[in-house]
Image (cartoon, rainbow, N blue to C red; front, side, top):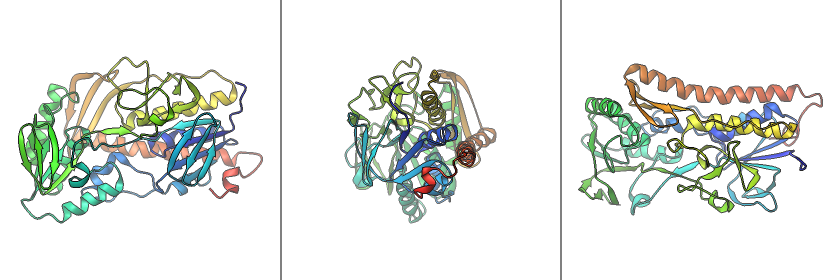
Length: 391
């Protein structure tokens, strides 16, 4: 490697971006790491269905998380990326880079008419909080329609039904419940849990439009007092603007080391990227894959700095866990490559496991942050640039 690698810019402070920034800073504390995000607080996204039902989540300032490490946090909106100049345009100014890590994450889609005007979403905290306020204003017997029966829709339906048993909660699926998500046994477990909670399921509805107080679909018209759209997620549109190959969902195609093959100064991790040569089920946009991918990218960036061989990341997708309220859950096992096995379990054990996974993700980030702080303290030259610049 002939070009210097002294300046790393990480775009996005979600699970993948934070994991990458802290892990790299722990390995290379004397190098410049700039973490960019438009938010001031870390989003514990896998708990937003709890926030949407009035539960309180811990607040973690990104500025405070980065304090004492060699990671400089810049709160800014990313406006564009110039690969030829190796620079990023942000609302706080232009940032140059030697290596760029694209961890811009994903956002909820609005792919049918009326979503923005008539439906809530829970892809970010502000929207989850607005939904919480709307639910709080509903009286007994009010109808809540949740459009989209993926992981988000399932967890939100259960959470609302458990906390507000006086509401009529309806989960609207495009096709069959659990299609491409659960095994037959997993679907049966889910149906039993929904029956206990009182969640109504409408299948094969195929919503085509959302109007004021009603959803129009192939199967008819469904009235509502509050509607939530959880139809899916899409990566940041900035990924496509890189001018690099993407998959059919808009995710950056990367090699086994996490780099864009056409521009090896760019790494793609988390929901923003997908391995080009993956042969199993399409890797889901998920926290459970984002964290290890962030750590692997950090290891390879450090290896580049040392002139060592890079380490490929092998996806091992053992399964997914769903919370069904605070006291029930569902774990669907996979074959390792993301393909669904005919094996699942539920109940309080699954709920306990889901909670431990949620706690583990945050604990993993905090441990990486602590290692980065320790690495700074061990530098013989004293404070790093981040401390001097007040990051």
